[in-house]
Every structure is written in structure tokens, then in C-alpha cells.
Image (spheres, rainbow, N blue to C red):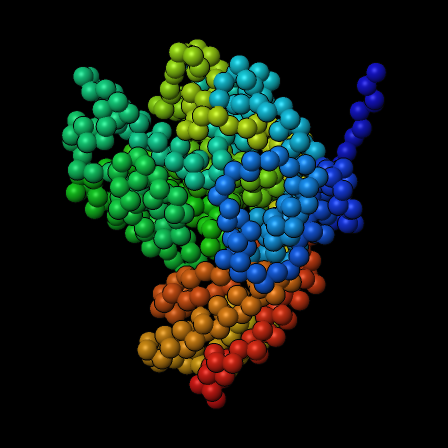
Length: 547
């Protein structure tokens, strides 16, 4: 007899608890398995140690190319992994690891992952995923509803239709973007009369048939590198991905976008797709999606939104308006392994029109038969694990209000950190957070005054010289902080409008981990100040120039 159903309610305390690090377990195989099943963060937190070993040193542990001739006991092999692999892995679940889009996982993920791996379902076909196939279709419906908010009858009609699909699960944002542009290409260069379409006749024959001199993909300067991969794979060439200038807030300049569309039309180059970015990788900014959708409609091209990072923001009623216009997109990429807190390998692309995926449909006699509900007929990847189960479970266990709490806290934590940086005399905020990403750098007040002076005097040479030294100091601090192992921030190089668009090296932080406290943020700045003082070359030169 089943137990009575309990009513759960998401609270800040309950959400914090599912990410909380546990005490260290013993290292016997049974306890390792039990501990990992209940709390990966706790397990890793006690076995990953700060190490200054260079990558080349670690490579020596994995240098033997011979397949072993003798079997090993599982317990012995686990000890080997603890010593050589776990101890030298990156502690991505640490609350002081704020440099990349990889965060702590909820404690319930490990037992669910064990179930998923044990079942070993292959989502390419119904014959190997009888229950997982409808589950994945439901998750795609839930995510489609998150983006497009259609009425219930829409999902009843399309979600489980054998001839249609609301999207596709894939390994990440790169494959999701490729899939979206693959659909766009095949729909644009579709079969016509005696022409069999681009998928059968190739890109050269397709351009000849339709009379285009070329195709183009337009995206902002902050667009993800996966778009160039897509253009390469789809046969239109990386040079067809055209970067449009951004404004001082790292958003695409829609006037320049429209001008480029007009120029390409005159050159008889067809715009295949305009790509809006909802959460740029480097700065976390969101393009003006409504304006971009209007331009895409004017030039009759596919409008894709790469929301791999920012798409989960739709789960927050408070911050959903930041993505206004995303519902106008023909396709949307979202990575569940980012702000939805599931393990790596869970990306998806959603299509507004359920009939869109027919443009890339493939069949085979022994699998993916016509009329079947095999998901593999509409995906780039063939064999796939049932990652949709982890998304399904997370949506149920955390719930939309729970995700809203996590997302709101992350954005507000980034705003707090930005204020902290602004108020500190020795740091310069480079980009304000729109989501939970921001960039900044160590720059003593007198150096900032010097930059302002050179900027006002339009002394570009002097400005570049100071920024060069600051860049070297930023690299020094970032590398030392990483090597010391107490905390981690990443670095990047971006154009800064107030410095005449000059590219400067900056710290980049991502504040998605719910365990990252305000105290940790204070400590990270204090550590960076201390490391700056240890610079024997760059800081003295900067202070000398400013005096």
C-alpha cells in the first residue's frame, strides 16, 4: 500500500539543504558508493585536495597506452581512482569555485543518476526506451510551454504525435545550436520541383537552384563559437557567420543588424538565420530579442535564440521579463546542465512549430521506421542516455518556485558582488550583471584615475600601455589564485566601450552556486588584493606610473 502523498514546499532553507556538503566518509568501496549516492559534493569535498601539479605532471599518471592483461579488484581500482583522478579533479561544486558555468549538484542527483545508468535506456528508439521516450517528449513539452506558453490543447495534440516533435534533447548547447540551424537550412533550401533539397543534393546545388550567392548567419560579437562550428558542418563556411557590433552593454546593435541585412540582400546573399543571445558566455547579457525578431520577420529568415545560459531565467516570474521576445523565436537552445542544476550532457533545442523537425527527419529499416515515435529520427545524435529523466525529476523535486528562488538569489548575489567591487578602491567593475555573470579587475584607485585622465585626453597610446600592464597583473592574480586552490575565478578578454573599444583582460565570475556566501565573495577580493601585492613587476610599475 502506498504511503499518503506529502505536500512539499520550496523554501530557501530546503533548497540550501539539498546542496549542502556532508561530512567525510571512509574510503571503503561500500561507503564510497553510499556516500556518492547521497551527496557527491560532500564526497568530492573530502577527496579533492588543493594541488599545484601542472597538467603535464598529472598526464604522467595516464601515460601508459597498454590495455591491462590482468584484471583488477574493484576496491583496488577505486583506490587508484581516488589517488590519481579524484584527488586531482576540479572541485566544481565548491562554493568558492565561481569562475565557470558549472555548479554544485543537488544531493538527489546521484541516486537518480545511478537509476538512469542502471536502466541503460537508449533514447534513439522506442524498442530500447519504451517509457523513457514518452517521458522525454513530456519534458520537451514542459520546456516548450516554458518558452512559448501555448494552451493545453496544443500540447495534447502535438506532444506525443509520431509525426512531430517539439524539440530535441542533445549533449549540450553546441549540438542544440547545430540542430536549430540544420532545421533552418533544410527548410530554406527545401525540395522544389525537380530539386531534391539540400539534404540530398548538397549546398552547391541548392544555392544554384534558388539563385543565392551565399548564405549568412548573423549574431552579435558575443555570439558563441558553436555557431561557427555549425556553419562549418552545414557546408556554408565559418566566414558566413557575421559578427554584428554590440553597444556599451554588450547587446547587439539592431540598427547595424538591419543595415547588414540590407547590404546582404543587395549582394544576393540570403540570411539563413539571425541569432539572438540570451545570456552571453562572457558577460551574461541579453540581446533585444523583440527588435531582432522584427528584423528577422522583415527579411524572412529563421530567428534562433541561444539561451543555453539564460533560458532557465524563464522559471523566475520576477526576472522572466528580461527575456521578453524569446517567445517570438523559431527555435531556442537551453542547457539544463547550467542553471537547472543537472549533470553535464543535458542540452535541448525547442521549436515553435512542431512540424519543423520534419526538415531533418531520417529513417532506417531496422530502426527509426516511418510512423514510429522513435526520437532518433529527429536528432543529430543517435544513441543517447536518458538525461531527460534527470530534468524531469529536478522539475518535480525543486519545482518552478524552487528554481525561481535559486535564480533570484543568484542574480541578486551578483548585484551584491558588483556593489562590493564598486565600493572597493582597488577594483574596477567592467560589466554590470544582468543575470548572474559579471566581469571586473584589480585596479588601484590611483591607476583608475590615471586611466580616466588618459581617456579624457584621448591619449590612446598611454591608455593602451596602462591596460597592458593591468592585463598582465590580472593574469598573474588569476593564475596564482587558481594554483593556490582556495578559490577560482576565470578570466577573459573583452572590448570595453569606455576605453574606445580596446580589448582588456578581466576576471569573470559566475554566481550560480547557491552555497556561495557573501563572506566567500569578500574573501575572494581579499585574496586577490593579497596576491596583487606579491606581484614583483606589474603592480610596482602601475603604481609608479600613477604617482
